[in-house]
Length: 100
Image (cartoon, rainbow, N blue to C red; front, side):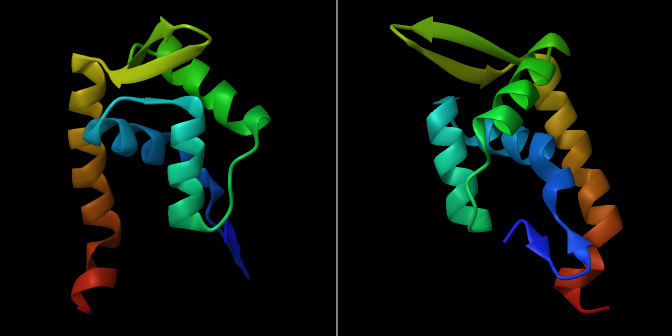
């Protein structure tokens, strides 16, 4: 359900990746599966891995190679960005949940 008629929800990918990594470290396939569980649609590798690369290049996440997989974690900077993003998200969308 990445697309709700008239409302494209794909713009939240970076935020969702950071949010998931704030819970625990994950490799790319775990991230994709968790996003699929939440959205109903699994992101394509051509969407997910460039987002991971961008977040890594921005210093928000780091990857540690383990065999053929890379396990991603938040950096201290990434943790700060998640905190700021949650505040921003609640400011923008909080009334959806409170019904005000």
